[in-house]
Length: 428
Image (cartoon, rainbow, N blue to C red; front, side, top):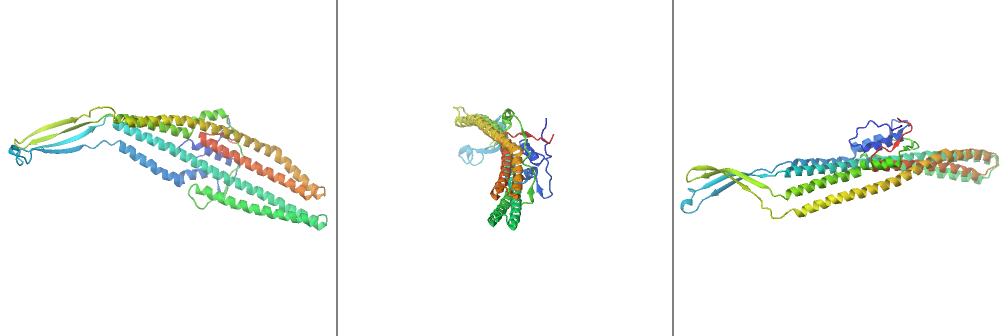
């Protein structure tokens, strides 16, 4: 079975591989220019240089500090007590002084391990959120890249329209010079040429803005590339929808809910452990001044259990756990519904591309060629020739938009599932 080659990019999370496979589809069969930008390069630049992703690393560092803190035991406490001082009789002055120096500590039992487990579960939640952030950033980069590629395709079509308009002006000028056509047709053709030139300028502005939005994904204010590379008409062979549904369980969003459940379970166990009172021990040496004797002293403090003083927090932690379980099921339904809608739209977009490319455009191009010959022979009017030109240009624009929509839907499906969607027909 044909599959997509993986790019040689080191990725910490497997969910990013899907968007890199989309990059392979875009770039298969295209020649890279030295000043061009490929989709996989754009995604890697975003993942390694995005200011937002770099800022999130500090949240991970802070959570590492929480894990370290959770593993620390309470410090022992040094206690000093003095008895029979500055009293009367035998306790007058310091002659009957009894001084005790002791060290007290707390027996935590499994409480420290519960704190560590909770902090580590928090790290898993942050890791899942970081995974989603990276995947969303890669998807957003792919969208901006696709927009830039769409503007380039629109510029190519605008160039074709401009060339047809110039060709038309030349042909009509020849007929005007020969006295077989009114100058009114020449004026209309010249006006159409000016409008198409103006539209070409509009596309240039849109394309420049698209380049800047793409470069901003990795923190650059000025693009260092002059074009994006790829062929949007290189479409995938889709995997069956049932296969994608089975892979929803791997989606980063569901992984986040699973991580939240683990965190809430750890928090519940921590609250249950804290409901049990902690025993405190102390031991030390006692000095009896009147007899110049010393002795060992020891003690224990045992909390009296009169009900559960932590039952409110336990109930809160249990409710959070149940809520995360319910939210996971709701997310699963929402993701599968969105996946179905996107999959149907993607199928339709691919069908439109194939129909326009194979059945519509070739016929319109043939009609345009015949219309020009008929115009030169005086059998067609200028308007009929112009209509044939518009039919070709409109169908090429529809093809470009359909292919771009197909790739945008691919990006969304891969973002939802986090798995490879398609197999390229030209790569093993």
